[in-house]
Amino acid sequence: MTIDIKTVGTLGISFSRGLDQTWLNILRRDDGYTLEFYQNVEDEDSDEDDEIIDASFTIPYEQGEEILRQVFAQGRLEDWKAQYGGSDGVRTDLNWTIDVDDLNDADLLMVSGNGALPPEGLMNAVIEAVRAGEPRFAACFCEFR
Image 1 (cartoon, rainbow, N blue to C red):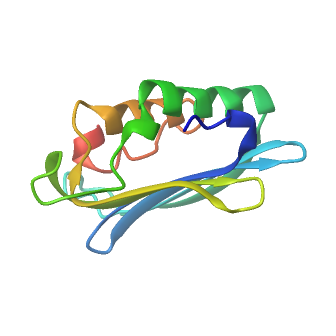
Image 2: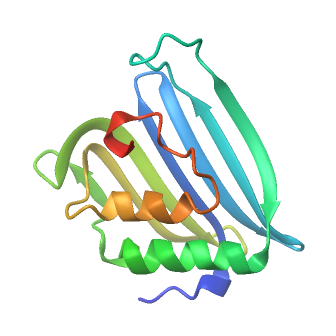
């Protein structure tokens, strides 16, 4: 199945470890894409106070579609297994989901992981693509710095 980027209404990516969490949504709207970014992670590598980020802003259609195009092309998202865990993929203590919905909020693709990331740096390719819209996304976890 090949997903047509113009039929994607929402791309959501979330990561959590214990109570620490971050997520990013890219939502197609009438005036472009809304990018929502949330982060609440205690950074054990820093002496700074924890920062909660809760941001939402609009990006142009062209930029949103290019981010989605890169997520699917570079991250090869459609080739991923539906779930990663145990001995699948690269071991991690992160839990994560990637949810892709159509323009009517119906599921097009849902993948998740509990203790494992997909192999071959595929998650890093997805994160690199979405960082074109929000450079801080997932940098709070050492795996993606």
